[in-house]
Length: 245
Image (tube, rainbow, N blue to C red; front, side, top):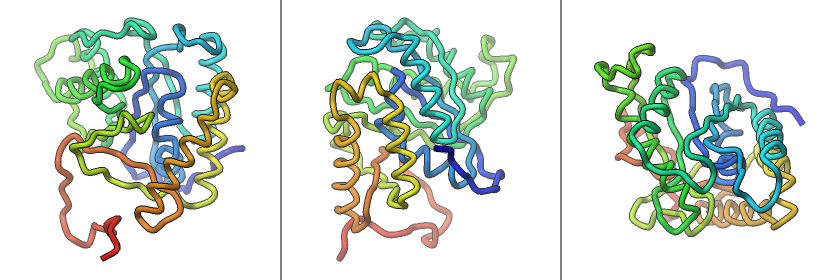
């Protein structure tokens, strides 16, 4: 299955970070598919090869991630920090991620939520990306001088599991109801065969999306959690709220 994005190319890039080869697809793959279909360039950065996981080898998981990214219409790269299940929030890592932000020049950045009750690499990566987004703006930071400084517009967090959803941030619900988006998202999750053989992660994520969609009166939705207040130039930019008054 191949994505068929629109011909629009004037949208700024979306950059998404995942601690493991399947995090982005399970946590926000429907959003990735929706943005890529709209013509937005999307780049995925995976910060391990799943080498500490119970199911699948690093080689298998890298291949699965490349297949999933192609399905979603995104490009992908892998970087090494401390290794799977060994990640520590060190400044050198934040600077490395800031370099990627400068190189890609995204408008939007997605990262795992900061909630602690999840795989420890997820929250730690979320903190690193948040720090990196700030460092990417600093023109005098010598390790980054080979790329021009860059300020993103929004940092949004995604939750791989329900337990990782922040309770103190009102989510932004993204409508992923079109059947072609659900089909692409499902296919991208299924590409991680080593993982879905162990547990029915696909149905878990689709059920979450159906529940969020029902809350908003639509078919399926995914939640993103903004790091900072969202700013709109006009009320015309607002669609509607989840509550039906």
